Amino acid sequence: MKSLIVLVSLTALSSLSLTQDEGFPQGSFNEERTFLEMTDLPFEEEEELPTNPVQRVALAISTFGYDLYRKVAQKTPTANVFMSPLSVATALSELSLGVAEPNEQMLHRVLNFRSLNDLEIHKVYKDLIGEITSPPKQFKMGARMYTRRLKMKPNFLKEVQKFYGETPKALGNKPQISLWNINQWVNQKTQVDRMMTSVPLRLSIFLLSVGHFKGQLMTGFISANIMQKPFRVDQDTVVYVPMMTEIDYPLRFGYDSDLKCKIGMFPFVGDISMFIFLPDVISSNMTQLEDNPNPGFIQDLIEQLQEVPTSVSLPKLRLKAVTELKEQLELEPLYTLSRMPKIANPPLKISSIKHLAVLELQENGIEESVKEEGGRELMLDFHVNRPFILVLHDNASGSLLFIGRVMDPRGLIVI
Image (tube, rainbow, N blue to C red):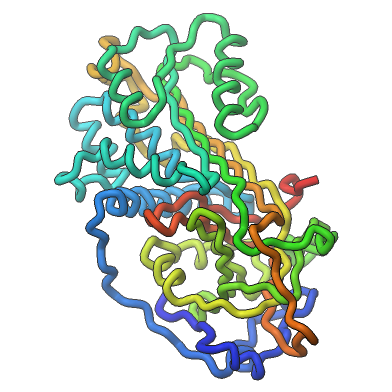
């Protein structure tokens, strides 16, 4: 990804036209016609690395998160995918407090911690969690380790609680009570009822992570303007979803000429940004686009995207996904019985690594979009009416909070 086209001034609007109206793209985006009076800004080849400890840990975990997302997305290229990689990383970081070498180094390698040897990683991680879950961010997360009928060592329990705010829990012999306990914990974090319907069989170590976000937009949408509009899943399938619509929305907007996609940035309260990557052409395969996002690119977008009045349609959705991640995390040495002496004396293995992510896109904002008197004849458009990729980013720490793609919104609609 080498260049991003952005508006250099609002006067450029005089040269713009509405490219897609409320319909669907029929071919490639007409960049030459639509983006007159713009500049082509190159990205830096070398990204300046942060020196702040919290930002360094966030960068390592975010890099892990983009890599994990790509592995999951490649496995099911036509399905909805959604996750909160930070909470997954938290579960693995908790586990690293209890494993012996060389498995501790393996976990640190997976999480990109090996470049952080000069830091007290778990202490800094605690500071990161405190930052990203503090009001008014409205981001909630949790990671918990479950075992069955196991007496865990007090020092391990104490350290996990100290750094990560959760105490690993030993489940008893009654499956229904164990299931209730797990679902109660999940509900406290996410308001999701009955995430699980059964406890993993032959459970030794079960890692569970959850992430939830229901934030408030800086500029909201008017509820009266929400209406059912078409979303084209593919060339043959159209479904109707509730669309939050504003004709004159102050969107931070850009276009990637290499990836042929529009990019919209929506600021949320708490210095959080949501990025929508909207390909020009409806496609059941987003591999090329998914190969590119990384922490440096997102930082470039924050610095370069400029606000411009835009006709926006955004689905009102509740993104929710439960994913088993054991295969994609590739921690094979921990999938067979091995010594974890800091946790307990008997050999242990990871039986399951399950993850729940929930993000609600709603119209609420601290201010409403103000329509200019008389309107405009010509305006940019950003109609999210086809498959797209979403990234939720904490600007202060640089953390990747959520990442996903919506291929088919059926089942994600907010009633």
